[in-house]
Image (cartoon, rainbow, N blue to C red):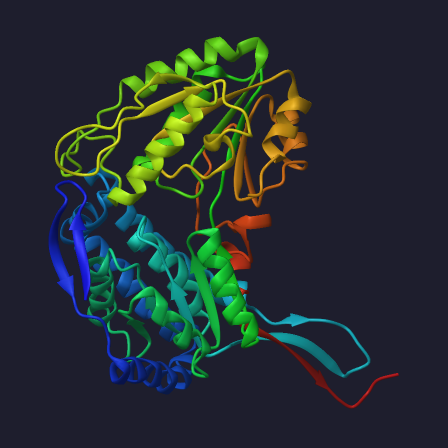
Length: 456
């Protein structure tokens, strides 16, 4: 049984039974049986379904968004935006999959030789709780438009969101077996990955979970894409627009109560503007409203689970004990729910807990740097390599971007995911890419075709 606890109150609001062995077998069989006909629909036929998915999401946003608020505490205004973004992803791949996967002619000794991009079969998506609708479509839209069928294993804490997403596809007219959800406990996923009816895996989550999934997939010689954690740096140099940087970095840090892999986590600031910039951050963070995620006025809702909140408090406590200054927050609140205050830690170093571990919550960490080279060295001094930002002149920003060890760098802007652009990490942040043209190429067979007779 998957039990859902509302992080606003700490009370159980929903219980969803897990699939038994027969149901799991039925889901896998339905996906396998549906795939040939789904592929045969062609891009236009598949696009009609994805466009219908997008339309349904938009038409029912007021019903769908509250599920995220209830199950994982996402503030209402962010939940509404997430449903819209999920719809955009479905539309983007419906409109662009055919051009992304167009055959590529390559000259050889053949009369004609080319590469065509064919589906693999069924792709399993193992997804987390922090963005249930967006991550579902980020996984499913490219996989489906490439001609694969998709099985989504949602996080056990958001089964209501998963059920709603599954119903979206039903209402949009997706053929049976094309998109399904698998409701199982985490230990039961290994057998599904190994099943011969699963041909590839997409995983979003922790580096520890990603390591386990990658090991199983590799042992079965199945491709996998891993989008894992991050300790994402934002470099702020003295020649930056400090107000614009402070506004954007604050937003990046507190989206979804800071529970985002690509949120700004380590703010590395040039000495000449350190005190000034830290104060700008403190002012902006102090103005945020922490409270009931059902209210549109709320900026920061609760942490999704109490164990996550306890870990956040450990990270703050140990970092302060190691010499950091706590300029805001840092105290465990009393009362119902899993709330944690917006917290600002100054003078942190990479050997402190909050400087080297991923902080999944509304905790901002600031560090000093003597100059751009020192800032770069500190930014790269991490096991992670997901995303980063640089605030300086455009020229310096682009030059530094090429030397930052991360899969995604924003210069003078917020780090975000966009259906048009590839996203992913290096080092312990994973491998492979999602979104953009690169994302849809992850789960296809790039088949070489040589047509004779031989020439010359």
